[in-house]
Length: 101
Image 1 (cartoon, rainbow, N blue to C red):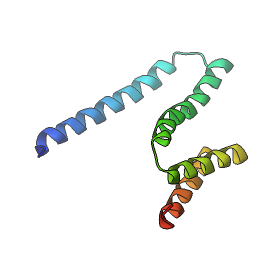
Image 2 (cartoon, rainbow, N blue to C red):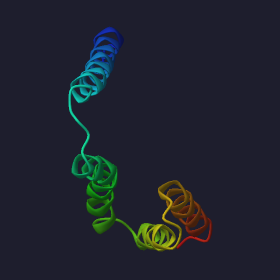
Image 3 (cartoon, helix red, strand yellow):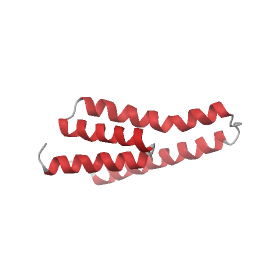
C-alpha cells in the first residue's frame, strides 16, 4: 500500500508544477504580440488536445463509447459548441449504459 505522506507530497508537488506552468504561460504570452495567426492557433489548440485524448481512447473502447463519441461529433458539427457536444456525448453514454449497449 502507498504511504499517505509521500503520496500527499507528490500530489502537492504536481499541483505546484501545474500552477507554475500556467502562470509562466500567461507571463510569457504577455510579451507576445497576438497576431491573427497566433490567435487562430490558440483557438484551435484546445480542440486539438481534446481530439488527441479522445481518439485513442475511442479506438480501443466499447461500441457504447463509439456511439457517444459519434453523437458528440454530430452535435459539435451541428451546434459548434464544444460544451454542448460533451454534454450530449456524456448523456448518450449514460443512456447506452442503462440499456446495456
